[in-house]
Structure formats: structure tokens, C-alpha cells
Amino acid sequence: MLYLLLLLLLLLLLLLLLRMMVVKLLLLMIEVDIGGRWRLLLLRLRRHGHFAHLLLLLLLLHAHLVQLYMF
Image (cartoon, rainbow, N blue to C red; front, side, top):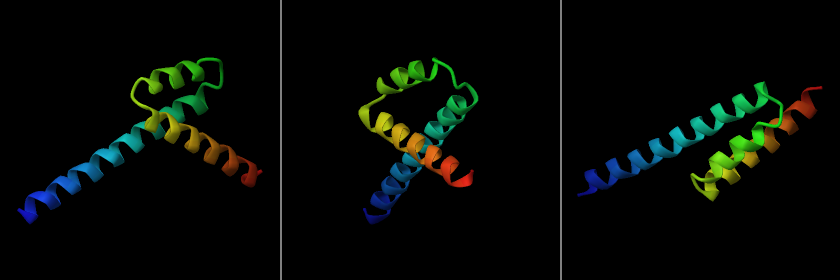
């Protein structure tokens, strides 16, 4: 029983990591295409849930802060 619970927890952690990797990929797409299309990506991501949208906004803020400190 404990083994099953541990396996489920590991699977959930893996799914969360995968979601974060997808969001980072979207961030890279946004960084490459700094046009009006990033809003379309945000709207598309909003369909997947508010958590992913909030995570993307936090990552965008973090990326801009990193750019400010680098230059």
C-alpha cells in the first residue's frame, strides 16, 4: 500500500515537472516571437487552467527581472 502511494506521488511530481517544462517551452516561444502573438499563446494556455496561466505569468516576470539584472 505504501509502495503504491509513493508511486502515485512520484507520478504527480513527474506530471508537475512536465507541465513546468511545457510552460518554459512556451516562454521560449514568446521570447523568440515578441509580437502580438504572445497574447494568443496566453489565451490558449488559459484554456488549460488558471494554474498554468499564473505559472506562465510568474515565469515571464522572472525572465524580465533576470534580463534587468543581466544588463
